[in-house]
Length: 288
Image (cartoon, rainbow, N blue to C red):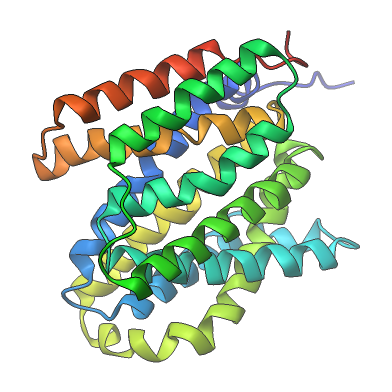
């Protein structure tokens, strides 16, 4: 009988802490959109969203051929695909009108409810009590500016919460099957997003730079972070993952420093410290 071998890559995937996968997801969650904003000068906002979704769907199709492994799960996949399509479109419409930090803060508001629903210890309540003001200080939340942008930001926030719920359910079936379900959902998302934004991407078809940039946005925004989300969620409770989303605005600040040379104020630095303290204090009851 042939011995079963485990490749180094699979061994690392199985033994790496789930928090490490979340950190990778957090970095690319806003690194990808930072590149997308630069692409807005060449392609309409909805066109960029469609390029992101379509390129990610193509990559999953070639890489996983996921439709062969998800028979019987079409109802949640249809929901997941619709959420991905509309969530990505509203997110880009929001960051086209509002600062990225403000959109990040609004995105966190309903997610904290998911964290609170899973909180049953004083320690975890303290973690949320630290993280919420930290996000506020970090992003200086203000519902001022473009009202339509605020509406898109709140729509994206609600859909992001739905994404966490649906994605976490898939991840609980195992990271491998979860990634295959994600790939199928992304193919569905491409179908849903086509009437929304394909028309806006037409000018990019004659621009090789825009096409290459769109594929890069798809990889950095929809392939890497969503796959690492599945790897993290497969070993995290939903409430723990939701609380760790508080790190996203902090990540946005770091990316602002590195990519855009935007130094944080003292209040923003305090926000980063509070968010990190909140995540450090939180204890996953199941893991404990």
